[in-house]
Image (cartoon, rainbow over all chains, first blue to last red; front, side, top):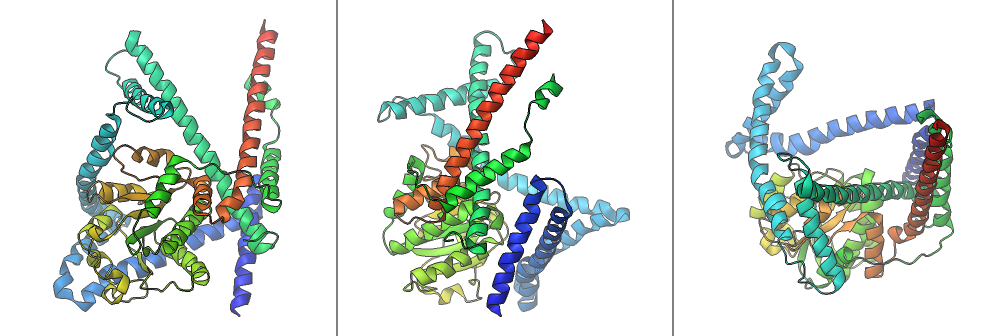
Length: 213
Length: 280
């Protein structure tokens, strides 16, 4: 019986894969059905997951097992209920309090972390002696790192008109930005092809058995 | 002008079909194109190689089936590498479905490594919501965040968790990350606050945003970006798998994309020239 359901699962996955890919030809009922089933399943999955893997283990169980030690969990529970009041137009203003709480705490927690990791550590990593390296490739890379960072930051300085030497530096910064956009596009193209490879490995391997999965 | 240029374009469905064929054929008829390794992946490999046997590491599965083709091969190879080096694996997940991803690999490796014992060499602590806050709490005391494993066994009863209180008792953290929360949060807390080495793998799409952490400050000790890096890692560990078998298809598809870009640009310049001449 288990084998039957495994085979059924593989066939369903294969058919839904074709259903979704059929959109590349043109919009059609098979695509629509596959898309709607995916959306419905995702919503159902997350609803159940939230109840069984977040609310029950983090709220209901601790409160029912040892209320005295865990009563503080009632505060986020109440804030959560207040958030849901957004669905009732006449009292939706109550939801602003938990929202402001979330924004305030998130800003506070993130400010320190991002300041250290994304600002101080990143700037420190750029403050290097570019000529202190092994071979010329490393030195060239370090020079590009320093020049790219400085010119890139200068491009985003808008309190002075981009002309003269300042304008030339900003223009060099644009070239560095263009290269980074190109690299990002390249990575994106690679990622999309990788996803197609993954699907084809499934279709040719698990489904058709043409290749070894 | 735009209308004229567009009339020269071919139906994009032909491009889809060509890409499909160029990806499918190399998967069936393997060419075996060479794989060159890069410094970032070698750093990941060296980190595992230089970790003493018996050490404990955290592998965080911060992805879901949507990113499986890119991240699953590198996660599989990392687990194999750790088991080969007798490094104990503690699995966590910042994404709910990461738990299933890890278990899927565990089920496969149980056959390949029959000596691997659950609770001694490997444990799955499961998913915990909270991202950065969760990692921060783990840095103080694991037990407050993960009192049990996924089967409900108290972690005090698991030999692998003996003596593990916080990140001080961990050799390194490796996050397989498809977004937020993920590797960025591990860097911010585990490395930048607790000073522990962090490494990992990311999808190609998120690689440009994460690569700057591989720097002089060693916020990240190497990084595997996309399927190509997974294939490099498989090559370094000498365990060819799904990533290696997909590299021929990846290379051929990239070649086709480059050809399309060149043809598109040539056509664009030819049309532009033609229109300029017509306008004179």
